Length: 177
Image (tube, rainbow, N blue to C red; front, side, top):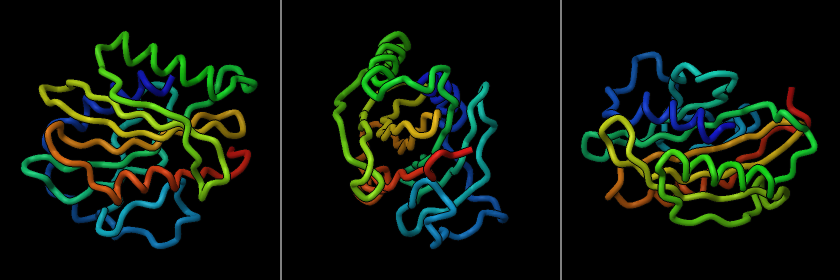
């Protein structure tokens, strides 16, 4: 389940991030190459190692806020049961967050991919690697896969509105490989 993988990923990136590496490329303009469109000024970076069976499709770092660089990442996981519904997956995700001590601040159904697909929005507060963070997420199921776009920021910092809106651009290709 992506919620558990995300907790492991957050543990890797929740500590203050170093400056972008020299090989970091500029923000892409061709949205079709990525399952989410990052806000202007965010840089694509090499993704951390994916925990378990998950694939990190994209990883973008935003402008530093204090000693923390917020990020947006997109994870993909093959569903064990391709007939699983969005409501079932949401229930499992909420259970996983509660079991791991995260506090779900809000969640609701949301249209994503330019309003063409049903998705789900979560906002979760958690403590990982000595840092309090807020995760804003959009989840969508497609072609036997679960896709989750996550915007991670330090707790106590305001949300970057363009970063939050970028989550609604989550739009994996239909019947992804």
